[in-house]
Amino acid sequence: MSKYTTGEMAKMCNVSVRTVQFYDTKGILHPSELTEGGRRLYTDDDLVQMRLICMLRTLGLTLDSIQGILKSEKPAKVLNLLLDEHTKQLDGEIKEKQEQVEAIKLIKESIGDREAIPVNSISDIGVIMENNKKVRKKFRKLVVTACFLSIPQFAFIALWIVKGMWIPFVVWFPIQTLLGILLAKHYFKDAAFICPECNAVFKPPFSKLMRTSGTTKARWLTCTECGHKGYCVETIAKEET
Image (cartoon, rainbow, N blue to C red):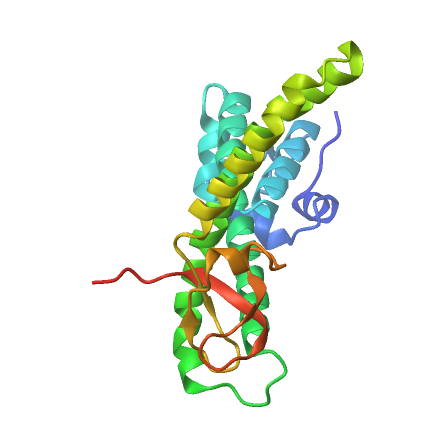
């Protein structure tokens, strides 16, 4: 079995000699042997352990967590559970970063090509970002419901193609259209829009919203306050008190 000095371990694991020594003093990885002169010697198993420690450190795990894994009765099971939890944490961080990117895009859309940013819009940015999260949550529910309503439609189309029975589809189509309109009306019930020109928050009629194009971030509308035509940022309407 091969034996490695501290320097050799450090080189093969791409860490400093001091790091290998530190792991020994912290009780994370002891050398398998000490020479008469007090030099640390490590085996192939120690090398595998060292590489595992370095990998876990790269993933962001703390030394205490790593030490707990290595000293547990079932290190593989503990490692899997710990990595699962770490993955959830990273997923949360990724989601947070994605929301920040979307918020940046939202702010840029609200600013547009103007050279100066109105003071009111600066104070509204935080509110816009928070409301945008609520808008996306509502939109996800809308998409799920719309997909659910589409199931009968595809089933009736398949029935029409395979069996030649078109009556179920013809009967269902107006019902689905009506349900779609009611669903959209429910979605836009609490929706309001911020004009990028005058920063006014306005609530256009549902009939106009149904004829506009846009996303959950902005829609092409005419501001009811200043008459500006363009993309207006979607937000949540304030409750009347």
